[in-house]
Image: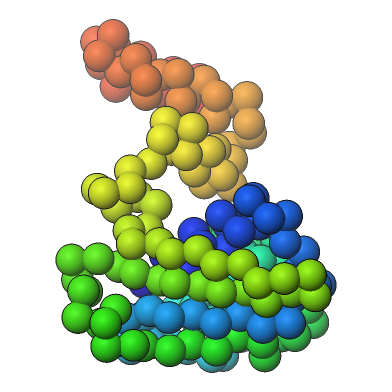
Length: 177
């Protein structure tokens, strides 16, 4: 339920080169279930942060991504994150509520020292209406797999996965791991 808002932040960072240090206010209009599931305002550990819309928005704005590493304790305790969180306002207007679950809407407005920017996301990245690209999938694969194996082995594993139909047995597939 955090993904539409995070996607809006990513688009604004990309399209308008927004710097988190210039942000004065963030207004999020989304559906009620977001707050029921991800309305956690405390993020003392990774599990709490994953269910905190405010943390996810702040981290996406500051770090430009929101993967495994952005939920590490040093990132959770970053004083800049708390400063950003204090600037976030979340509303659940009826016109958006009534469109959920058909749409997973998040309308995000960011006011900076130089202007106001807005993005509307109807379907988060990964939804059937807004599918992942191959590059998205490969990037996620590398981020997760390299937590346990070196990057060169991850590249080999990815190639094997892409060509799995050519392997006769699992022993051939896993050779060298």
